[in-house]
Length: 458
Ligand code: PHE
Image (cartoon, rainbow, N blue to C red; front, side, top):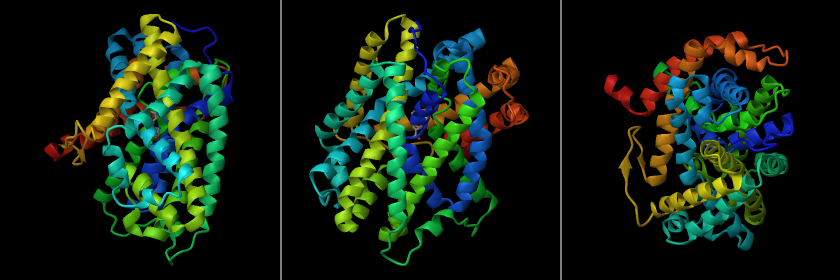
């Protein structure tokens, strides 16, 4: 069921909502870490090239499928080719899995924001604080609930009055906060370490072909997660884009936004962590944000508390607009599937999200286990969900989508949609070549490596 008036009012609304989805915890807790690990400027350079090639191809594909079919993933692939209906189902699985844990992470951010509002955060900087929090019975569930309720409320209000309106307020706020914190971070001096140079200067030392491939794969998987592609989200958002909007221009703006924020996040985090904690402070994932940074805030003295408040507010904004996009995708797909109004489906998806998120929270205490994942890392319930959706499903979906578009339907289908109003799609040639040859091969390699199959073969 298509709601009446369910579209973004114009190009800016779409760009900000899509950028809201793209800019999330991945930009802030994974991008800077990968940069630090993968040779600073070298990683930046590789990432930039990938954004302009792969990022642009995958994003354009998703958005164009959405706008042209005016359907969500579940039905869109079926409309493209009835034999490929399964791809819609597979794609729908990604937000279904991500929804189980994203609000849990949102809850952690909310908890730290509140902690810094009501205290100077000295406790948060002590060893074991984060672990004690996530392994406790009630607190993670309570904070998750707050975050989830906020998400559901925005989705409940609908596309224009909810998602678009809030993105228009939140995204400029996020940019402002991240700029202020990054500038502040650059002024920090504590030791002689020059964090900025470490960040932007390409480090070619010890570079071998194998190492370069590793960097390439890191950048590639980061790109996926960061642009929210191959998970049906951009198809759903694309279906809300009016026909007169210039798709080429909008997708470029979304990429610039997402990459710009990731770059600023590195500028904000790397120098600060290096100056105060040295190389050891740089970690990936939650431990960077919830363990290393509180120590940095503590070392800043009186300024630590206000900077931490600004930081966690900015993080909260980033996570909220991403979580909204995941929930909206689920709600929109279910509305279309069951022909029920938004409010009812919002309730149903809300209940699903609540129950699964509680289970994920329990994954750190009552349901605790350690599982060795095929990519070599050891994970709990949350990591398992993250692994299945990001390392397993997303490359696989991109691979299949590129075969469908490149070989079954033909790239002209997408190019025609981009040029719908007579716009000139400058990179059409690149698009055609990438979607037919490069994307399928690289996705296959990425899939084999991240699932551990590559180790079996080579
Ligand atoms: N793109 C978001 C990020 O960079 C993450 C995200 C994943 C958002 C999946 C929505 C869905 O953090």
